Length: 104
Image 1 (cartoon, rainbow, N blue to C red):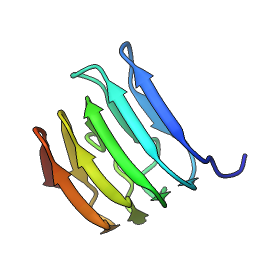
Image 2: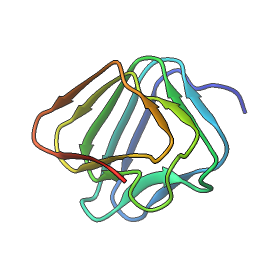
Image 3: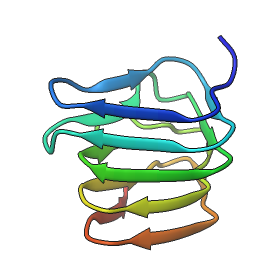
């Protein structure tokens, strides 16, 4: 329980589903296999990232999405796909290096 300071997810064999609301006091860094995603387990959950959100490869928010008010900090998409949720998305800035950013 509680907030995380830095969180690095490096996973190649399955999806990662967040259960509950999550706050990252600094950075969230995600590297997934191209066909896997980091997502909410239930739609009403929220994410707050006070530092930077990095998507190196894989997908974020593709199937079940965070539909509350989400704060992503500075979002950098190096590769993969980042789907902004149908909820409120506060982003400090967006840097798309070679991925896809869309909204559902």
